[in-house]
Image (cartoon, rainbow, N blue to C red; front, side, top):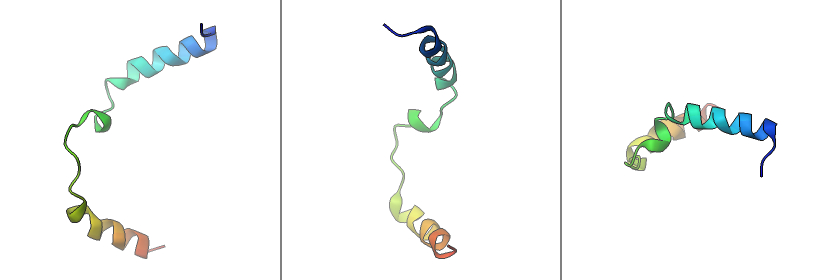
Length: 45
């Protein structure tokens, strides 16, 4: 059993889950296309 505070947080998680588009996509990203972007981004550090 969860306490009242956890129940309230869980209600928010369930509510906001419908707006989480990224975890609902069934297509994996093409890492070969993304690799240059992230390499350049890391190179700026």
